[in-house]
Length: 178
Image 1 (spheres, rainbow, N blue to C red):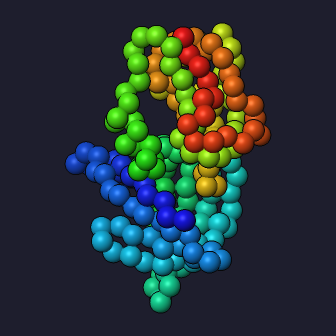
Image 2 (cartoon, one colour):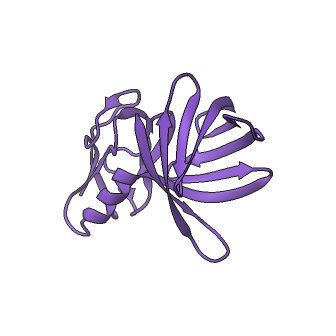
């Protein structure tokens, strides 16, 4: 399966955005395409827990093996390579387009929906809680990455449809705000 991502990197000249395509091949092999260049890597997770993991990436056909540490929950990650840490925002190309196409309503009810199929890892709010726009409300694991879904607006939690451990489909409503 091919997955397309948009990566926003923070830098001294301001943020820069890049599109990356990742295709899972056989075993631990992945094909990564960026800026018209394609490489195949043997990608092995060598350590990790829920929010942090370390990966070994060995390029097929030779080259130096890279050790990469990833910390955080998508979309907000810190990636460390060769003792240099770079904060970045990672989101699927589909979620990026959906975010531009349907801005969150500023008044009236709003819902937090799963951007892709996955499993609810943690519910961060309860019915009646007051939340601020951008506050994490639920964590969904998809494609072995945890994604903290955020409230689209300030409001009060009206309903929590998600339960920890529950499988979810893309577009499924998990939290409703009023």
